[in-house]
Amino acid sequence: MNSGPFNEVEREFEALLAEPGMEGEVVLRIGQLRMLRRDWDTALRWLDRASAATSDRIHLAAADYFRGWIFHHANRPADALAAYKAAHARYDTSPNLNTLLAAELMTAGQRLEAARVLERAMRDQHNHAWKDLWLLMVEGDARRAGHYTRQMREAR
Image (cartoon, rainbow, N blue to C red):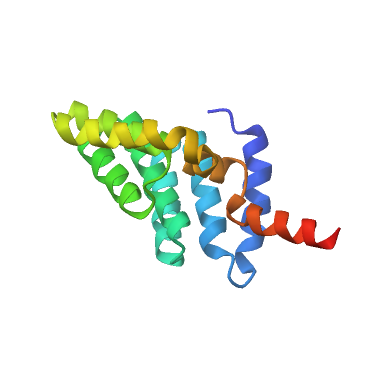
């Protein structure tokens, strides 16, 4: 497990745990780092903690999405399907999530449901690609980008 740069980033996030209102996102980010390190059990514990610490729809969807990814890679297809379905119930305009959910549905023999979800993913890909859940979490908290852009335009 290559953990060099992740250790430093994780320590920086852990330092933010004491900040009021930050726990949900901070533990989600730590869980994401552990997931990327393939430290599945630890990642799942952090993601469970994230889900308990926030009511933010996008953070909850991301925690479920990351769980699905972990379960898929840990060869736990039923758990992956359940996690992707939970993420999709919270955030259904993510092309990557919809594609992964469709793949799990196909594997489970739920072809009609997979086709419906995949059709949505393909339709939304050109309309909502910037709303992809994975990109929102990897690129940072982009939910406010439109708001910030409007503020910058107004300030000119």
